[in-house]
Length: 459
Ligand code: HEM
Image 1 (cartoon, rainbow, N blue to C red):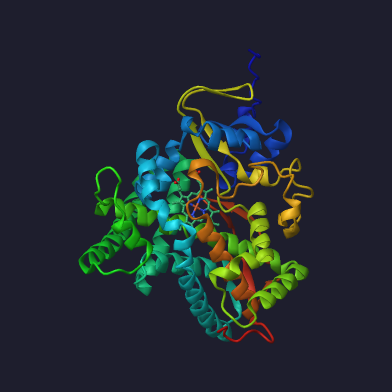
Image 2: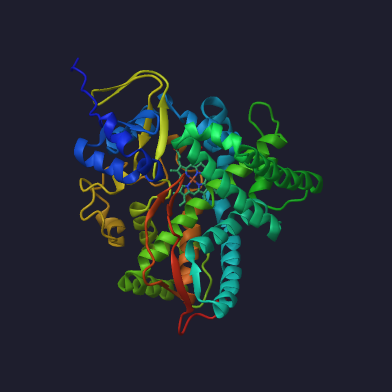
């Protein structure tokens, strides 16, 4: 039996010294430590001493090979769970498996093919609105626009009747606020008494109750109508557990719907905003995207069959999510003692899988800071180790919406770029803001114009 290896440590004073910076943005701290100590080490992030991993083999061990030994950490389960509810993202063990089996068929490719119409229609309506908006004012924050668009898409895919405009705005606002709360509690839990004293906790509770009222309202209406809408909510309502033949109750439906709304729009919105920023810096990439859209789509809106042919568009999205992975970190907790390549991982240890770190590692990527969509051309992917690229996680808990997101982003990019030009406003600062998702801190402020010779409104 080989002697176990000692986990490299970041000295505690270094974490303390940078405590506020780490609370604000832990990526530089974690990246520095990865450079100095390697792709597995221990450090204090806030009050917790955690293991930080960016080695693809170790990641595969945790997410796939020995996934049964790793559950989500308490931060995800208790904090996110208390805000979003007990759904796929926040549950573990037998209940998770039961829910995953029930919900997975809603995301099979043939089911998604039926949602492509929703994606194209919502994107077209959005373009029409954007036309009006830029006629008044060409300056806009593309992050906000993308949040709005992806929220509309997931809202329609889930509840085809859709939330009403005002409700949509409210839920959007509430979700953003609840996310801020979760992050504050994860990184600075000692602020809780202060938040309670200042009435903030009450405020967050009232926001949660408000979303409950909205979502329960929709579920009640749908149960009463009983007619087929062919959307994700219908699928959730009509699916039956194999063992009992029963369906989900209202609380389960509420929780799973909330999780799909939240998990299903922020991530894609961030990826799209980052993509538009990166493309704005690279006219050569923009030209290739336009040529592909022209060749594949001509004057049509994209269909399901077009998606495999929008290959370069897909590469641009993949490369964007390498540089700016919307889920920049995944966390897990060891259920029992484990050993990874000779490193002892004790029971209850929290492990952060540092997706951003792996995606920027010079070990797996040449010139890792350069935006180069050609990396994802098939012929260039052959030598990439498993789990050197994992924006959607992996193993049994791979993102259930990965194809939904990829199709949606292909459609949105191909449609928007044919209709509009996007240029970054001079002096606009791009910086990272890693919350639950990786956002551009100050948004992406751009000047938007109709593209000269644009496809007016595809048929
Ligand atoms: C660019 C877009 C997206 C990214 C980068 C992304 C990323 C991820 C990642 C990394 C995980 C795994 C988390 C973990 O293992 O702890 C995950 C899980 C999940 N995602 Fe996504 N996601 C995206 C879009 C979507 C969409 C569109 C939906 C739904 C419509 C969705 C729903 C979910 C759900 C329900 C889970 C939990 C799955 C489970 O544990 O069984 N995601 N996502």
